[in-house]
Length: 450
Image (tube, rainbow, N blue to C red; front, side, top):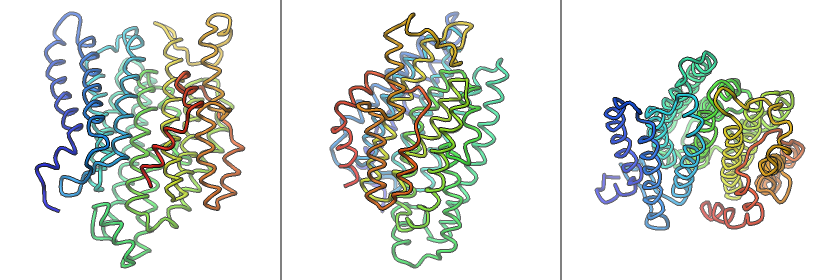
């Protein structure tokens, strides 16, 4: 496919975001010299950037789709929905984080620069249709996240968390890249549709392909925090300042889901029988160990980290089914999960203040007497994570388990209902609303894969 000038409009949201990100760099470099610093201006400029980018994405939804940059980039229904969700989630993340950062002297332009460029990496991952494009987006996101975790340089725990995140993240990136190179050797291409065509043609050396698949799945498991590649996640969630943990725990998971769909479902769908077995192992271990480990936690951030691990297991359960119903259920689940996590960490930020981190479970004793409304919100969060109807968590789990049952994976589906979440997460009112009216979002997710 040759480069087509008109098709460059398919990447217009990324170009808008990049332009505003570069402008933010210049603005911060200038206003940092002012006594009040760059935090206030950078905050509002970042929010405006996400609003404008979201409007550009919304304007293009439902319109013409296709590929650009020699087939390395794609605009489709999946990319439109996920990109818009990423922009909206990150707007709320910045809103929740503002006062927390101000109280701890972290309200600087550097954080917002990293947030904008991390978002750019997420959008690139969502629309990547080539292994190298996907890898570049992933590394842009990862490098920004490493720096975000390490921003509190005077905090030894945060510095330690950043080092663990960087070292293990680099290892995961190496695994992923090595797997891609092996698959290139087997198929002769790095373009996702060409890889899919080569596998379906039957001309691929299956031994080499399966060897590459193992490294690919290991890399994905590391990036998502699936068991047994989860060891970094609790330490990073606990060690990083809560505002940074909130950023890491939400929108990047949407980009991670997109990476799985692009690589496994669209690129390696013809090898489904091989990667399904690997994902079954990761899903079962993540659901069981994530929940069991969460029970023993006294730190709410570590509890949320293990909750994330179990949620990753449910997302993988939807993907490994290998059907349109399963992919739609996994997409519905990841969107519900991000919304829940946003509310969960938002509650921690709300309860924290200067000199006090509300990161122990005992810090929430007597919440009902002090703040009845927020105690009710916490209850909604917990019920949703446990999968209690009519919260959205119930419908998300039901959709994934139902897809597994329909695909004949009854033993895996039995494991999933018997696990329950010991974590607080959920933007309470939004979760409750989606619980009463789940049909619209689920139908939208289903239509994308039909």
